[in-house]
Image 1 (cartoon, rainbow, N blue to C red):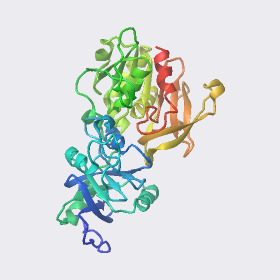
Image 2 (tube, rainbow, N blue to C red; image 1 turned 90 degrees about the horizontal axis):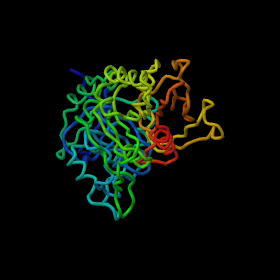
Image 3 (tube, rainbow, N blue to C red; image 1 turned 90 degrees about the vertical axis):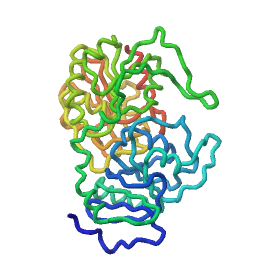
Image 4 (cartoon, rainbow, N blue to C red; image 1 turned 180 degrees about the vertical axis):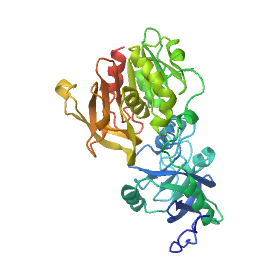
Length: 393
């Protein structure tokens, strides 16, 4: 049994929630949302808007999100801002107590929405100090517990945090992906009108492999001019080719790309061999790189936010070579740029730390980016990638 949490972290009288780290550190706060406890990895996100999109991104499965922006929940919640209906973030850490929503689009408040979705929230912490801790020590394994009566078994929570194996080696895509084929409908969202419903006739057919996709990816493919069919993460090469795709999209998702790649990479390799056009985002980008012969690795703290600068490189961009895009990111694994084979070009790199953010495979219509060009939340500098993919089909 693990030792009890340090005695130098006494529980404040108003504390109804606690974070217990695998190293025994304890942080107290005020709980909201669901009650109970959950174990996972704690990461931080620097986005100033879009907390509901962040919390419903399936790429956050197995993780808690520490928001660096202090005011979370003040615009409420609504069904239009949900990015995925499956498992996503376990909960969140915020600086200020959640206030009543003040926004004309709000249809509910964040605490009740989180309680309904089974997500635990903890407020009243110094999120900047917590973020610095993650930057210095790496993303930790933690348990977050919420009990209105303020009673916690710290020793048991500490043991649970220590025993959780972490995301490395974990395949989570199967837990968040769709279980059957789905013909996607719905494109661009307009205030007051909702999502448009363009017809599919005459459009190139994109089959999207769902490893934990955000819905806005499919909307952007439709906006760019495609007809979209979504298939499960474990779809086989024959399953995909039976749909007669003009191109295949590889989605974002949670977990370790090497673990998900055990079953997905052979399918991607077969698609490459058949010269099927491919476009990958985030986890999809990582598995495209694995299929091409590169390697991936767990990052120390990851990239998560809506203000990450990425530069176009590789000599493939003509007059726009060197241009910088401000992008939305959410990933804790990355492609090791030093392992790219000779037939793979690095097309984008992070200006924060130089990590790989894009590849293209020579002689193939196959490319991927580490970031999220569909945004939601985030800037829209990178929509051209959807247009490029669909226009080349």
